[in-house]
Length: 276
Image (cartoon, rainbow, N blue to C red):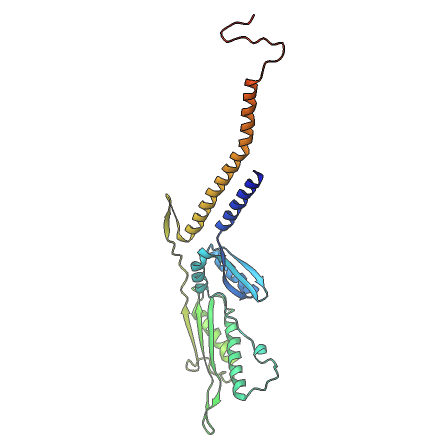
């Protein structure tokens, strides 16, 4: 009987664990800071997520029923942020001699990455992209093409473009060679602001018995209901098996007292007669 109860308990435990739902990886190979930002943003929208560290970085895990909402939440927040390389990483010594054209392309790319990283530190900026064109002579004898830059800013509603525009133009024009006088020249330096579409909760209610519950919680509720029913069945089955020997022992003891012979020296009085 003990083995049977043990097996029932193990079955109930397995079903309870399976009712908790499977966790899937939402993002992987993240830095610790990026993973914390993702979890904090999801938590603000009441989506539970956990992180797991491995050799390749940090992974963010959550319930499979929350995957759709989580993707839309992070897309609206611009998370996780795009990984950028700095000047030191691009121009590190690798023992390979680069051509002037390759060096120029790498320098332009590194300059754009540095500017994007700096602009992303402004509160309210979700995505920042910078496209740089450095001064270049197309052909011998031709005039030098002037430097120019284009800046794209996707921002939250909390950012006021009119307030930060002068500072962005000043920073970009002073960071790119040949653009010192392009502060007020919109042909050489253009800045475009785009409002980010805020995440809007679209909760769909479905019937679960007499109740209306969010659609993303329906699967979990069904699993927990099955696990609860199985748990109650296991508990009742175990209780019945535990009480069964006790009831049998009590019944046998009661019947034994009724059928036991009288003690020596005790007169047996037939039914209907009075003892004298």
